Image (cartoon, rainbow, N blue to C red; front, side, top):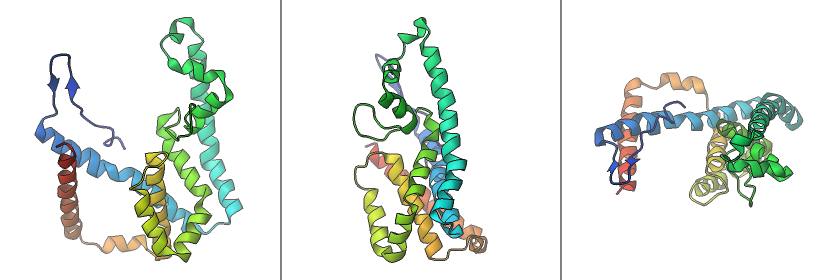
Length: 226
């Protein structure tokens, strides 16, 4: 996750700009985008796999996840949001933040916790940005019975649907990626995937696949910049 955010961007001045050197761009792409980029998908996949393999009843599942995810999410958000609100009450800080108006309505307060755009429907990052993955995971958990039914009853339809989901505009980019990898975790359970079989894969095979992935990602990375 640290690597994902370790990006180097061009610096723009009034009269010129400094571009990221070609070699640095390649190294950044390999480390941050390819190696580090696997962190969040892996998080949603493993979370889903562990959820569906346990087969808890829905009330038990919601009770567990409310205690472990929802309550901590609300608690820490409340501390940060209230602290931010108190700071903005200082006259010399009010003028530097446009968020002061958001605190004036209940909808504004809720937008800090949910990420729902205060000016219209749209799901964005919550106020504590790094908690977006907990919010999206909890949304996936709420709809997990629906995901399981679709995957188990109509697997082909489910797989095509999540592929199409990645290609269409969605209310929030992170949520559709969360749904995609969360659904793949459900597929892994349905197909009786055993993580212990990963130990049987040879390092040479992993290395070859990883090198191919690197070249493929570098190709798309530089194609987008043309």
